[in-house]
Image (tube, rainbow, N blue to C red; front, top):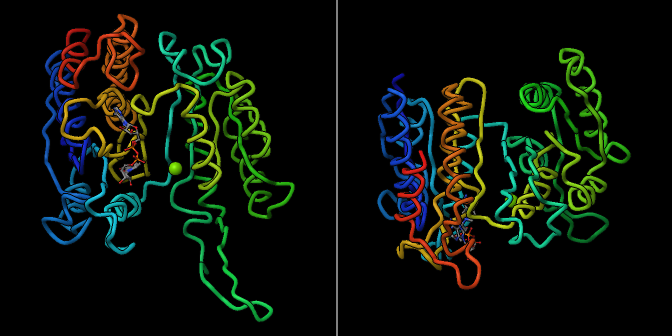
Amino acid sequence: MEKTITVLPGDGIGLEVVKATTAVLDKTAELYGHSFKYQYADIGGASIDKHDNPLPQETIDTCLNSDGVLLGAVGGPKWDNLPGDKRPEKGLLGIRKALNLFANLRPVTGHESLTDSSTLRKEVVDNVDLMIVRELTGGLYFGEPQERREVDGEEAAVDTLQYKKSEIERIVRQAFELAQVRSKKLTSVDKANVLESSRLWREVAEEVSKDYPDVELDHMLVDNAAMQLIRDPKQFDVVVTENMFGDILSDEASMLTGSLGMLPSASIGSETPGLYEPVHGSAPDIAGQGKANPLAAISSAAMMLKYSFGLHEEAAAIDRAVSTVLTDGHRTGDIAKEGEDVLSTDDMLEKVLQAL
Ligand code: NAI
Ligand code: MG
């Protein structure tokens, strides 16, 4: 299979983890007889330096003209004082919107040998394996009006939580499809006791569920879901929810595994190429020192193979390789305990390539 991948290294450790990831993709291509071609483009701070723009049109066009996008991370102290619409993060929001990536998939997979880096008890997080599906292009973050206004003679502010039926339907459908190939259990999270948008969400979820009779659907209020994620995360398989609830719950859930350096994500639309990136940022504190954990980015590439290219066996091989290096006790600084050997990014990459 021949695929063209747009690579957006971005800033800080983004460059380092993306470099390790393309090496893993190359090895996978070699082992399974595929050919992955890379086209590099600018985003974030690096792009501001070069083009005075965090997301040049050329970058969008390059992404649209490929089969999948691999992103490192954007941002850093160098650009922190720029105005909101000129900042590196604008590049990230812009590319998600430009590619119409309405579904953000964040798998939370606990690795047995890492459970003692979680703040929760071992038996609670051992082998936790769930997937949060967050709606990414609607809800409070995009609803209009979003403005300051005068109310009763004083300053006030308003945000709007709006969802169209079609927006709910496509994200819920996506979640059902995922649940079908996992353990056939879907939890839709809302605040239907208070919010009208949540009552519509629940109605649409029920309607869509008729097309997926093999998947068990239940509904949970978001405040309860926040509590249940900590109390008993293993009760969940696929969780689907609106933009802001998903933002908060997915950050909460990420801590079940104990390390930011481990978590991949996928953002997908319907006809555009998907975007795959580690959940972590550009880590300016360790950038350029060869200390970054590349496993989140590598696992993101595995998600690309699975969701954009349909290469399930190859994706599973990468996931297994990551699992093997952890079981064998190989650690970068972020996941090492006192007294354990600390590997560099390149050494960790070597271990993954060997395991593959
Ligand atoms: P961060 O995720 O970059 O770093 C948080 C802490 O985790 C740091 O101590 C860092 O060294 C460590 N860490 C993160 N990833 C790691 C890895 N792969 N291996 C080892 N250690 C790792 O978040 P922070 O510090 O809040 O933000 C730094 C910059 O990154 C900011 O400019 C922020 O805006 C940006 N950012 C970008 C994101 C993106 O591009 N998706 C997401 C989050 C933050
Ligand atoms: Mg967040």
